[in-house]
Length: 380
Image (cartoon, rainbow, N blue to C red):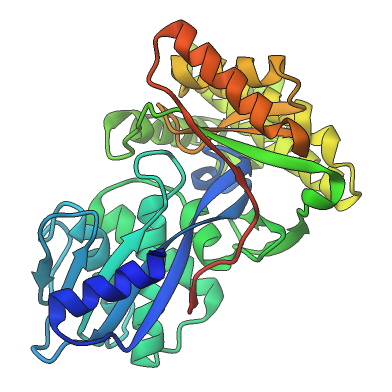
């Protein structure tokens, strides 16, 4: 069964009736621009074909109820505040709360979820859940929420209600991406540009390799890096590290007396420039030339931001050795996925090379697929 039919069947089983409609929102991979979002910088994600589907209908008891094919117990709640609903249900309750907190009257609904977005893989399964619930609530409630405002509401649900200090990249990608495009997002102004990203026309493919070394954002490592970046910006007298350019970087680093802070700052400043350089190349159709930028991004994440793990480093090395034009970890780090830019006919051999390298190191086998840029959240 498809994700859509499974979600609809789950709704009927849980609530004894059919849903009013089906909505879907995708996971994402970030082509380049890691940890730049909460530094007011630039990112370049695209939506995955894998998605979370919500079957949704009105709730006659005036409460919100949600069940999932991936969770054993349903969750029911009324009006709540941050922290009152925990676990996976917090992502749904958080969206309801964030909409209410923004001044909207949110309709009570019953929801059944199914998803083929890999969990714990760094491809934003949580943002997909938030985005699909948000989109359904807006549609069913007839709420006047402009598209450009929606990612910030979903982000607030995750930051304030769930307690994960993520930037706005994930929700923007899940809500605003378009098929065959990468989303060039300025995380300060929220301005977007849809960048052509039709790899098949160039005989290319993005191979996504799930390292199967799961990560978790609601831990100290992600938050610690955000605090370090904010502290560095304060010392440098700028609003955010986005305001430091590459030519200004040497002088800025001299003003920071902590080596860890210097390395974190160097990653953000150079990563922002790599996003801009990647966009320039894609605009002019020079897709293969972005490969070295992807690889340089990984090196920076490994050495300066220190968010990679052995599995993703091995995957990057193996993909490059197999002929990839470039490869990097994607997502918040400490596990998750690697993406590799390859010739389309080299996707399977590259995946096999990575699997062989994993076997040599005694790692759990990776899983791989070719990602094609898909649409953002929508009613089906």
